[in-house]
Length: 475
Image 1 (cartoon, rainbow, N blue to C red):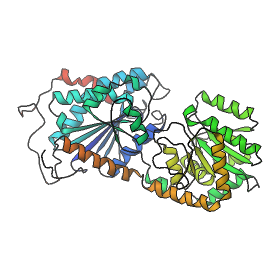
Image 2: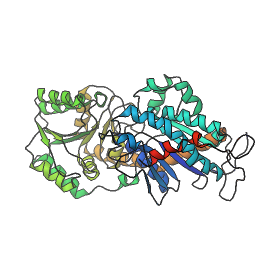
Image 3: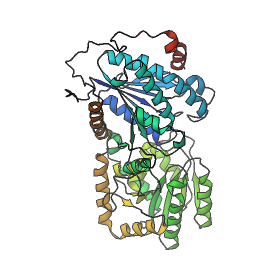
């Protein structure tokens, strides 16, 4: 094993992130879009040239640069997306076919080859099952052109969806598998693979103080002259894994026990939402829909809409929630119910902590949560567990403040800058295993990328398929 001089740095390394989702509204369907958008921006802010190749809005530029040109957004398959206007997963199979067919040649000819000629290491990271096949094809193509050994390939699992479509033997052979929590690592053991754990993160803006006056105003609106009223919040997809029914049952039991309570709900369009509200009605909870025409609304407009709504046990917030309002609600609520039964990581709970709120989590992928230290951790699906813990906090005011402080301290450890330090440490380990010479800034490389004889490889037009690649870049 050769002794390596140097380390991963913006001068010798660039990143390529592959994902179906991305920063466009068209491209965001859940936490995955948020993850890659924030990770790519954090890498670029640290100085790394970073390409994010995703299924982008067909009406936006095919190529866009941000962060002083270091973040390069490449909106892929736009010529397909224009026939499917309803978001990233509309026309999913057609987009997937185009992505698999065209991305590998583009990465080799436009990114890897110039980088290797300049003496740089390329890190390619794929996200979730949609990129499993393209990662394998990229590895094969780079091997063909004798540059595979100069590139680090990582593939990250955020979700257990569609794992039957992944060729695990092949993917595990050509890339280093990663995931976001120890819980997910253990899940992947069942697939006979052993991934590295690199957690999710949050941007530094989430640690900015929430406006205290806004928090006080929202609490006053919710409590309606009753300071004893419990204020709860739940946000996420209407998915049974999120344990919405457990949350609704807990609210009903609090009400029936004589404790006034108000729950803010922000779900999605999933059909499970019908079951959730039917259960709420059957348990005697009153529900009010709150709607706003403005998109995005301001913090004041959100509060005014809620203030004008009739009193209710459950407010169904049927409008886009701006980040400022969400963070204000996290801070103002007595607790945010992130009590999932299956959670790969639990980003919502971490965001609650960053806003100095109290998160009620599940006990799966939330590695960072310690019950009654920085969060409330539920270990069953019994609604009485939530009820009992909330009433405990009600009786122990000092515990509330201690948990809020502990949660905020925990959130600071999961800033994207900290996560990138974790990532870079693992990359240097992988580079050593792969005998990659991490060239220092003062060193130069004289050998160009080429064939095994050291001669520069001439690639025919047929091999690169320029018309297909240009078609994608041009949208």
